[in-house]
Image (cartoon, rainbow, N blue to C red; front, side):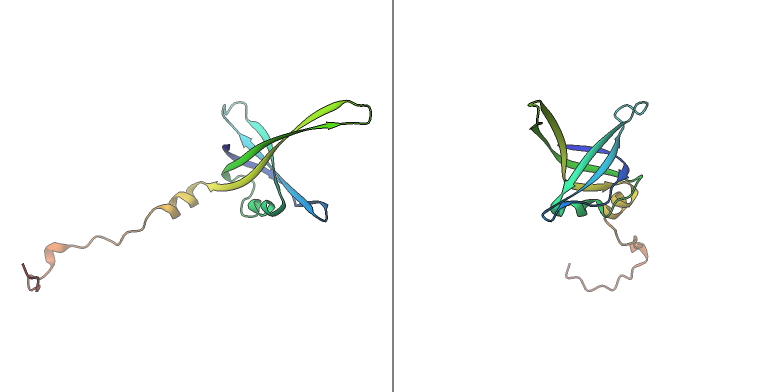
Length: 121
């Protein structure tokens, strides 16, 4: 799945244990600009570095997996949790579009070229 929006907040890396770390990003998603939604995504393990090159206010495209799991407490009540797990992030905006445009050499005036070329035809 993917979504485009504006970065609203980025957390520091959270070390849960020696073998597990995560980082959260809040995305402002404005399908209807009058009522924006603030959606929490998380990156885990080696994916926490995906958020290093973006800052609050940047427009991004996130690719993520929707995960869900049950949890049963001591009294036997079961709760369900959803996680939006990011696996790729693409920055959007002027910097990305200008760098992806090909650069061409400036035009050359061929009317002033000399006629003494040695082409065989």
